[in-house]
Amino acid sequence: MDNEKLMNEFGNAMHEVWSHWMKHLFTQGWYNPDGTFRIKRDRVEQWKRQMNTQFSKLSEEEQNTDIKVFQDFFGKQIVNFSEELAGATADKIIDKLKGRINE
Picture 1 (cartoon, rainbow, N blue to C red):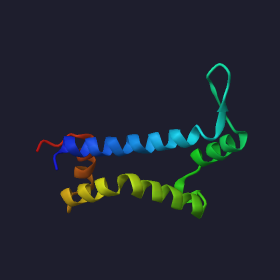
Picture 2 (tube, helix red, strand yellow; picture 1 turned 90 degrees about the vertical axis):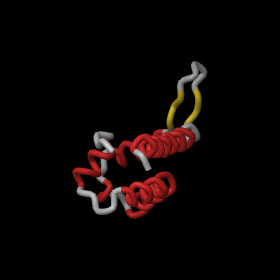
Picture 3 (cartoon, rainbow, N blue to C red; picture 1 turned 90 degrees about the horizontal axis):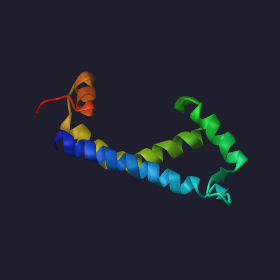
Picture 4 (tube, rainbow, N blue to C red; picture 1 turned 120 degrees about the vertical axis):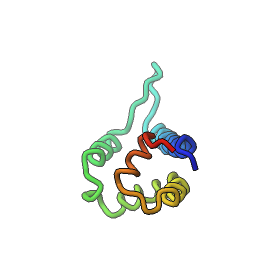
């Protein structure tokens, strides 16, 4: 798989994660008459806590949720990526992700 196709697959999966999250977010509050959106206080407190917590410090349930989301959205891309880069060094993988390898 070429670098551009791989990056497009990752970009598509990232957009799906964002879109899925935004759809969820907009069920967690209400619209104001001026079109702005207000989020429930408990969700704001929860999400602020989570965004400021390292993954390893999240509850097991929160970690499992993050892992499931990752698998759902990135599973296929990771399999393709790992097959393509089998045996590659960490530096090569990082360069590949940054699109700096001339193939």
